[in-house]
Length: 240
Figure (tube, rainbow, N blue to C red):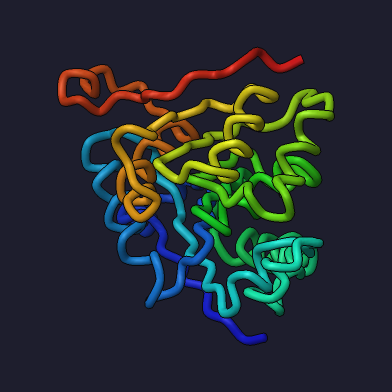
């Protein structure tokens, strides 16, 4: 399946020989979330809210096929008959995309993964089963209702250990999605942004992408709170 990768180094990339972390944004096609997330990432840099990074938009073509694992739920199977190949997509990121980016661009070795909705489910799944792939994760309103909330149930039964940082958020989704996200928040040391009263599912990316970057790529800027650029998420418990 052909897809596009959009790689945007920071403005100062050509000015010196500094190395930068990679931020992989899922659903990052030109007709998807690339321009929105790139604009917010650049805005963060203007304020010193998050450290500069090489932003990589990863286009998805069949989102449910690429981002979700198999489901035993008949209704989900009927609605999304192609879903279930997240393992193959993750292998492609690990075996092809990350090595290629590190070969072609001046990176500092670190890589971060960000996704929203179905892409957020992929982020959580990767954090659980292959955490060594990335140095930090952000799952914005992840679709944890998928397959009878099996991913959050799996997380609740695991010893978290020393996994990389996870930024996790919840908007007004309610129902099984809310149940799954709250279960994961309670079972992990994720920095949990509970925005049920202020964000809709459709506004999660707009509202929280800058904050997720602030959590994953912090700076020493001491003026952020003066302008309301605060990090408003809490760890549910300490990592074991």
